[in-house]
Image 1 (cartoon, rainbow, N blue to C red):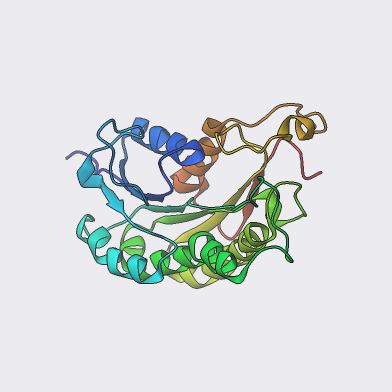
Image 2: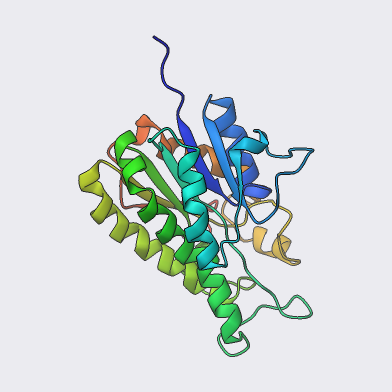
Length: 244
């Protein structure tokens, strides 16, 4: 009898780390269900079919709750991995960093709904499917969750810090179900959303280079695989030594 195909649910799949993660899991033979604000594109830049895509507005709590049933209908009662990768980091009119004084309350709410609350809603709603598969949850935080960053705004940074704390709490609560919960905290990764001036940061990194999305995806896959079967409640820094 052939081995059951494993299933990953990934938010924020259309570019950067999300796109690389889809490619890695596809290569490993997993079925990947993607969630994005955008409809499934005909050119399919991230792999998979339209039947494995859910258009969802993570900034809208009602839409997230409503779409959970659609997601559940695409599962066979088991979910092997949930990767909460979607994240937004709004900038000012001239691309400047938004701090605690300049970020309006509506933006605070939008950022936290996408970067934090959606992770809670999805994990709670799909806990039975995760438990049935003895699955894993990976929350994508950021180096900005641990220190003031020159480009990442205050709302983004605090939402990622909250997501790190959530990872700890979820590991405690989901552990008795056999579900592991971990986080990864990327630093300067070479994607389309890098801010001007990042090259200056690279000069001071111990490894003296940007990280690649594929390197982050490899760590995500490790945390979702049996190779990390006794790891839970931790956050792995992926930043070339930037945090030291």
